[in-house]
Amino acid sequence: MNQAPILELEDVVKRFGPRTILDGISLAVVPGEIVCFIGPSGTGKSTLLRCVNGLEDMQGGHIRFEGEEVHARGKRIIEVRKRIGMIFQQFNLYPHLTALENVMLAPVVVHGEKRATVEERARALFERVRLAHRINAYPAHLSGGEQQRVAIARALATNPHMLMFDEPTSALDPETVGEVLAVMRDLALEGRTMLVVTHEMRFAAEVGTRMVFMDGGRIVEEGGPREMLARPRTERAQQFLRAIQK
Amino acid sequence: MSETLAYVPLFIKATGTTIWLSWLALLIGAVGGTAIALLRTSRLWPLRVVALLYTEAFRSVPILIVLFFAYFGAPVMLDIDVSPFLAATAALALHASANMSEVVRGGIESVGRGQWEAALASGMRMRQVMRYIVAPQALRVILPPSVGIYITVLKESSLASIIGYFELTRTGLMVRETNGGGFGPLLVLGVIYFLISYGISLCGAALERRYAVGGASTDAVVGGMA
Image (cartoon, rainbow over all chains, first blue to last red; front, side, top):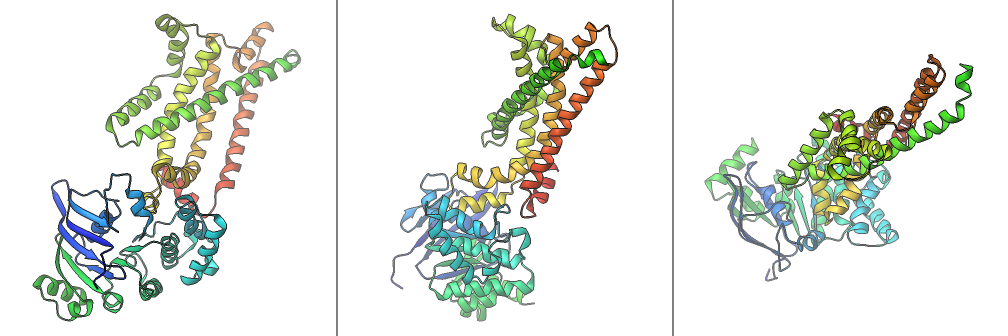
């Protein structure tokens, strides 16, 4: 993997009042990597993703996406956001729009594409997330798993160069987790670049190319998911993995 | 009663005047109220404070006092001519804008943070988020209480009779005087105000039904009222 990184984090620091959420995070991601972030809650995993697309500002360090410096308050942040698809824990679909309209909004409004072109692509996306029959439903009439799959289709609709998943299955019923993970697995097989904050260790081991264990706003350990799950090197990671396997 | 019926054309004209006055005040109030609401939700605290003071001031002061200020005070203080119509419109609109700003703010805040984030993350600019995500949902929340505000403005517009503006109430009182008192004109006034209010309520309910889609509106409305 001697490719140029698509995403580079350099000593990223995020403070909120007296609390330090991210305490110097450095990381480089090359195209096609699937990086899974694990660790106890409140250790800054989600915040890290949100710094990458400027939903949070940061107090120190640098983030470069495709060579471009990311500043939460700058004008150029919009250009970065256009190339990153984000999937949220709570789906965050727009309740006043149908599933199809949810998916079509950004391509039409942000990217200025023609409705007809976008609609064709959107319909194909609904096939892929196996929701072709729910295309005209409003979010309130969809199950959690269905909503999250619509959210994935929405993120894909703008042909992003990278996808970020912020605990995509944490708000789902156990029986619908599988359908969302299946869609994510398909995306992984396509060779997409993905950052995934998750508690689904099996999924991470199966599709992840790298695993990053975070604690207290720092990266404590990183490596291949299978090795790390089988033989965590640091004591902190060992404790964490033992605790969640109970 | 038969004497009163002879004044039907006059009542019709006065009804038109009252509707015009109240709608104009509501319209200005809605535009002004939206502006104040945007200030209230601004990131800059001085703007929020100014908007808060405005809202609280005009909600607390009785409209009659605002009306007197506009009609008797402004000409003296600012050395301008103020017609009864202008004074009445201004007073009603100031009052309505203060009330509308609270309703609009509730509408804007009913749209959850998560939706803002999803929209921003997709590359939308603030004004696009406002237009495509916030406004359509906020309108559903804003509509029902707006009907109430309109009805308030309609009734408040009767106060313009005190400064000699010939709207509905003033006309009715004049007809009553001309006919040596009596109960008839007052009854007519009451019925006309009722019909306008009730008509607006029905229109509002119809609009609500029309915009209630996706089963989300109920949640949004409940959220906005809380």
